[in-house]
Length: 64
Image 1 (cartoon, rainbow, N blue to C red):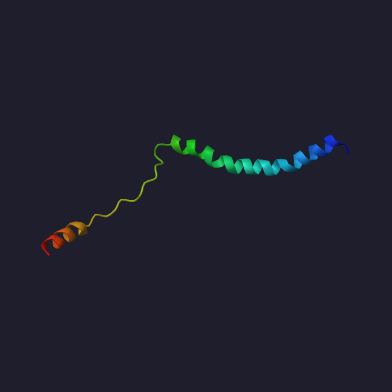
Image 2 (image 1 turned 45 degrees about the vertical axis):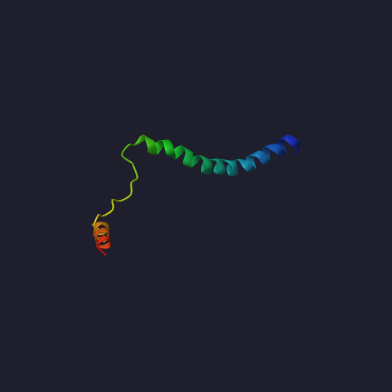
């Protein structure tokens, strides 16, 4: 085989690996605009339950 054919085979052998690596690197970058396009997809923490223990503790420490 000549040099051109050998280099072409090497390039064809490396193409699937290169495509996989580029896909893995580009996936998070391409996912960000898709998430920002939908305004209803906000991620929020659950609301904390307010049970008033802090105020009771504050009042009891001031009396002592």
